[in-house]
Length: 280
Image 1: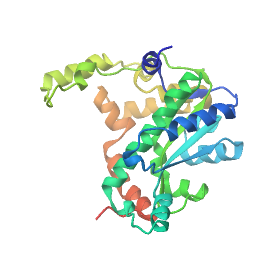
Image 2: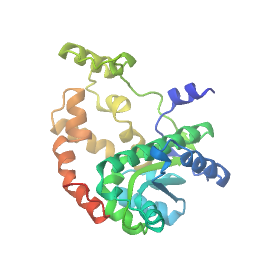
Image 3: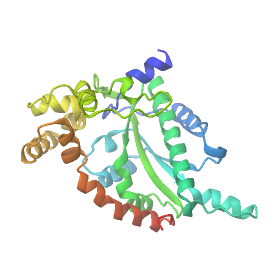
Image 4: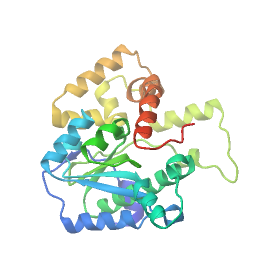
């Protein structure tokens, strides 16, 4: 399969086989992460691999109702690591204050995601599947404590990897022309924006299970591993919130607007606890 086909056909996998990922493959995944683009080639990242039953169990408990975290044979915690860089700078008789510079943080986060995506695509080429778990960002303090992460190191993304038991068939995406702006940004009109998302999602299906298969596959995949608890809860919330369109579904149920904003305070405090202080 060509790299293009590999990337186009990639899907987030949440149901994994009980099959160990061989060490030689893990080494290759780490190699492509280490060889990713990096601003100034500073490489401000570290990766914690989690494979033991104990580590997977504890990580799964921290994350909560996402069974793929516990069931994946391999998890990688991608961290922004200014601890190592600051030590190196001090030993080299110079100053590094990346923990106080938002620009350093943003460049480091871009590096981290480049590394993670390198791993995702390479894993696909070995017949593995993976899924990003961004909710780790709401558990920075807890992850740092359990995994003995020092100050100036931030766990920012979790990637769960394993051999797929099942792979979602498809997932809706915007038309390529919607994300394209030639030479200058082109502001779409209301009708164009509405049409773009209608083309992406299609009609709002009032049958929850059919709709979740298209727009909330996590519920379906969780139900395969934890019974129908997630599915029942999502159906109840869909009805209680009187959701009638795709945007309401996203910003009332999946990523509730007020809840997302309220996370700011905890996240900023977690950054400060880790020694990062660019919120002035």
